[in-house]
Image: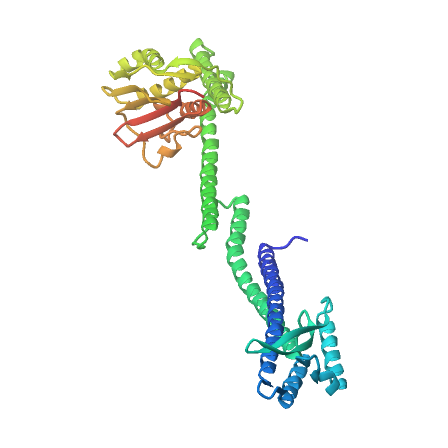
Length: 464
């Protein structure tokens, strides 16, 4: 049975607190009982020493007699505490004996102690033992006393009631702590699960095609805020991709419709006899079909460039020499528009696929020439860095609006919404260039402003 996150968190917190409280209670009980037992042992020893000290004072050195009345009081008081004493003089004669004085009372008290310890401490290996102490005054022995008591220690009913009350307090505190932890855990679980549940709902709506929804507000939990930010970013990306997908459909339809419509119109006019199938008209149809074939070829090149298994035939390439070779191929086109084409930089050796990099530089130069007015300037520069080679292509052409700059590497994207063939191609060149650069482990970036020209920067690693 699957449970909700809130239920699982609450149960987990409660379980952890329960285990912690149980562990603390058990350890507290063990240590308290152990310390109390040590205290009882010390009290037994201390009480025996007090009895001996009191008895030492009951002998008169001048008369050589014992104060038996006081000894009787000490003995009876000790008896009720669980100590059975027998006092001897220095000749070994019995001065006072609790058992001889009241045998039944001694037996009753000793049995009560034995029963109480057996009931409350069944695992204790205890019993009554007798210890003999010397009685002395001024360094002279005046007798001895034998003290019979339960060992190694014994506790009275008040002691056991105290320990029981202490254990009860530990149980009550544990239950109250458990209840409070469940309340606090439930509140914490609700605080954690609510934004996650909301995120799941948003993800569900996004999966259903609602890309405009966003996670609003802060949760005061860094990880959840990061999750919400990632979700919002994903929604934004999907919304953007959906827009690009729709635009791609529109652009593809536009790219195909124009030549197909022209060919269909020409063939219809010739089939109906309105036009004669002259050489020029057939040539026009052939050129339009060539445009379609060219678009298909571009798409094939794009698919090949974006293929994860794209095979690059890498070898040592001088980036500056490659830039000069490609620029030489565009001299005639730049001359027609009276554009000054400058190539500069230093020799930069990189490991790359020369043919594919040739296409990247050619695409960048082709775009620069198309969008640079007559009399303009184009600069191609190569820079050598310790870890990479950098190619820059700059022009002073019409530039790219800031809102369209992030989109120029998308398929079929063109800043010219009319998609006039005189101002550009199908909008795949930069997409292919980016795919080739990425396959080399590099990156391509664009910087531009309207009417201030554009600057493309290609960074390629020197070694894979």
